[in-house]
Amino acid sequence: MKPSKRLILCYALCGTVFALSTMISHSVQAQTFTVLHSFTGGGDGGQPEAGLTMDAAGNLYGTTLSGGGTSCNGGGCGTVFKLKHSGSNWVLNPLYSFNGVSDGLAPQGRVTIARDGTLYGTTSQGPRGDCGGWGCGTVFRLRPSLSAPHSALAPWSETVVFAFDNGVGSLPQGDLVFDQSGNIYGTASYGAQYTRDAIYELTPSGGGWTETVL
Image: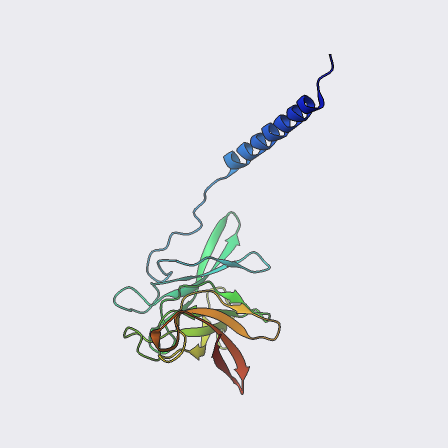
């Protein structure tokens, strides 16, 4: 007696589910966990709270909330770092250590790679305004120092693109996004007069940047 169409369909579906289950099981079992770098809280930074950004060459860039070469409450003001694949290992290179005075502190978002290869990011505090005593945060730009010798260990130079103040969106903690015109978009923990969170836009204007709370 020939099997019914319904029975044939059932066999086909069961076989497909079994095959997929086997493939997924093998895929999960094939995963391995490798520590690329263990932070010390010193010059290499500490407390990496954001994700990583990868460039076209496969290098990884990230930020740490604390650590670095200067002290903010005894724990360092935060860093930006680069992880480069070297043979079978990964080598971490601290690109910049924040000082907490003129350049901000405590970055809590990923860096964004601009078209020219420079890095843009945010610090959640400093150097302007009165947001908990440490300032209201910045948007910064990092690029290789033009005066330093060409070396993998040469620190990068930092420029504060925009320093937030009390009266507008402040304490930025998220990632940045560029549009096709070069405008920057991001999120801040506080809106105008500390009332709400905010989404902001930074537009190039007269050699500087103008903020609009969206």
